[in-house]
Amino acid sequence: MKRKYDTSRFGGVNIALNTPYDENMQVSSQRIKKVVRWYADKGVNGLYLCGSTGEGFLLNTQERKQVTEAVMDEVGDELTVIVHVGSASTMEACELARHAEECGCHGIAAVPSVYYRLSEDSIQRHWDCITQAADLPFFIYNIPATTGYNLSMNLFYKMLENERVAGIKNSSDSASQINVFKQAGGEGFIVFNGPDEQYLAGRMMGADGGIGGTYGCMPELYLKLESCIQNGEFEEAMRWQTIITGLIMKLLSYPSLYGAAKTIIRLRGCDIGEPRLPFLPVSQEDPGIQALCREIESYVQEAQR
Image 1: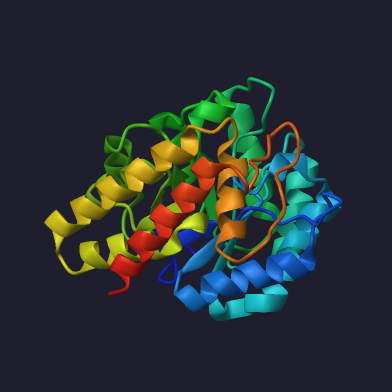
Image 2: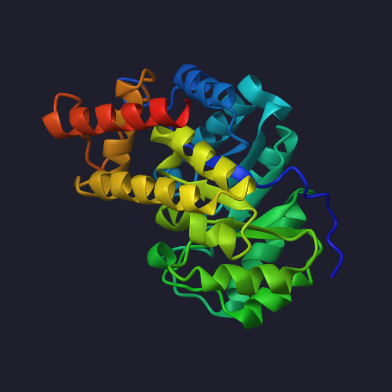
């Protein structure tokens, strides 16, 4: 089916933004602007707001709007901004979608309604209502590990009939699913790889780029990996994917990935605070996290040579 929107700006390396807080655990617009400027200056393609990495479900509606407003104030059209508006409540998701359009964002995304185990008819109705709320490209967010639902081809084909559905962020474990979605979506349909440790595999299976939570603490390495892919240097791309995956495993060794990532970002020069409970913080005095930061910095220097 013909898509309604020009999707040419979507793709490449997109940071799933860790939501920055101040010392009182309140959303900090100042810190948001500082870190997104840091990413823009490094050359990433876009930002993905208030998703899993952004602790979106730990933020209230006004806080989620605050994140969007601060990001758009700082980067506007300079980066491609997709706002995750997913919510347990369809009404809240639609309100966030309308706000994203008002702010000039470039796309919206949503998981199925969370907590409740819904029928596919309910999920379709939920997503369709969101697409009707804002005249923006809509990206399905398939993340079965957290939602308990893995998008079926039956529902996928139904969603493709909606002209505002522009793509999908696929965070299932199977890279082959990316190829299936890409082929079924047709011309102009955008597929984002979700699992960071399979960025290369996802791109080889047809993904147009990636959106990831560990990109934020080492964006230079993902940019290097993407550059190798675009230049057809696949052996070198495999080397960088192996390096990145090793770093991800070290981040995952901490009780909280988000706590570890936020501490790395802080040690690299952007204090974005700690994660909200129930996610645990990681002390910047931890010898392991300091060593990991030094390792990341050494690879960044290599990637930029």
